[in-house]
Each structure stands twice: as C-alpha cells, then as structure tokens.
Length: 210
Image (cartoon, rainbow, N blue to C red; front, side, top):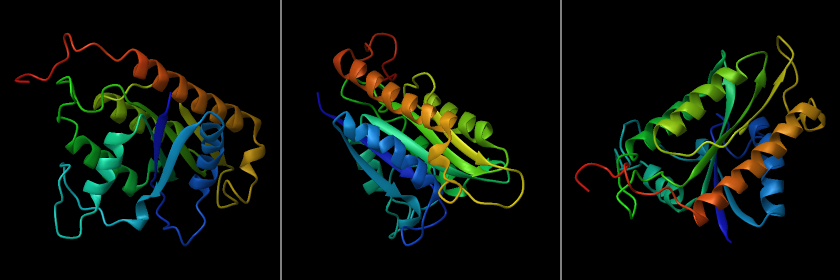
C-alpha cells in the first residue's frame, strides 16, 4: 500500500540556512523511508504565502494554492515549528490559517476534505514551549478534520537561556526525543494505512448541503 507524506517546515529560515526543526524532521523521514512512504519536505520560508482564511490565492504572488494541492494528495501531514517566546512560529500560524481556509471543502464522499488524513507535529527550540506549541498545532489539525494518532508530537528543547539548538547540541542523541520520533513516525504510518483500508464512514459527518 503506497502512502504519501507531506512535511511543512515552518522554520523562519529559508533553505539556504540550516534548520534545527528540519534536523529533527529528518529523523522521522528516515523511518518514513524505511516503511516505503513517499515523503516531500517543504520549507515554508521559501514560498510567498499570503494572509487569509482561504485556499485560493489572495494576491498575484500567493503560492499557497500549489502547497494546498500537495496537502490534498497527502495521506500524512507533518507540521514542524520552532519555538519563539514560548509560541509557534508566525509561519506555523499562517499555515494553520490557510489550512483552515480550505477545511470546508468536501472530499469525494461529501465529508470535510481532511477526513482520512492523519496529522502530527515536530517542535524544536531553547527553553520551554514545546508542549504549548504542540497543543496548538495538534488541536488545530484535529479541529479541521485530520485524525490525530496517539503520541505524534515529537519535540526537543535545550537548556534555559541562549545556547546550542538541536543540530549543534546533538539532539539526535537524546533518547526521549528519538523515542518520540520513532513513535510519531510509526503511529502516523499505522493510522494512515488503517484509514486507507477502512475510511471513516460518511454517515453522520457529510457536510450539510452535499
């Protein structure tokens, strides 16, 4: 059974710069690869994404519609965000708003478009805020129709104050974080397979008017 995963890295750094969030994302992608999942990782800072609660372009330069097409094709959506002042990045908030803008569209059964897709999160940063960011992103994905398997919030945080982040601090040697990365990857794959074989029945959750 073929599965597609889409990872939206909401680092504020574009692809010309190393991303600690991408460093942790890579650990999950390795397990996706091992399980035959076709994965694409996009750096949101590489794109021009307009403000708005819509899936359609909000200006001539808005590239969200092409990202949204990839979301529609994916079985697994993984959102990655750094922590700034204890919160998700501004790009992560923007991505959630744009995802929300397309959430009322129907799938082929008349359900909300994100039904039968699974979602998870990856968070990195110094000090605190990982669980706060995870709770925002996990709730947002669940609210708009994604299925959230158990334990799909992988995070790493450094010590209080300025200091090395995930890559420099060798966060991939942190036993707790690596166990969570493994759990996240396998649970996302397992539930994506379950939903592909046994999709959520349309009874009781068809969009009114469909």
